Image (spheres, rainbow, N blue to C red):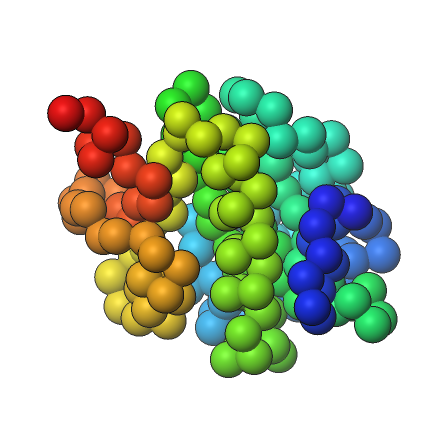
Length: 167
């Protein structure tokens, strides 16, 4: 287990999660704003392997399950890519659990953990146009929309911006 919140556990993905991950990753309400491609069960097994090796070390790609504390049922996932001067995060919540505050609760904790581990890094999230729920969520978490990058069709949201530290 990586973290706990009032209602959630953030942990490594496990093979028992595969059917639920398969369900939401293949539902248009979840994938329409995502860039992931792993949707088959075979591809998801590889994703679970990545999650099992997640360490939150520099230069690592990490994948974590967002689970209900009471039942350990997966309700979504968090992607964390730790680079040389920033941490990129991404997230998906199952359509079965939209509008319950799980993304806010999980991201609030993981962003704080990442900032404590890498205080000199900025934390970024990419949001596709039209994903108003993510825009509002990131703003509520204190992220600022810094730019739109046309080549990747995404707004760049940043917290702990390096631009603000350069004087």
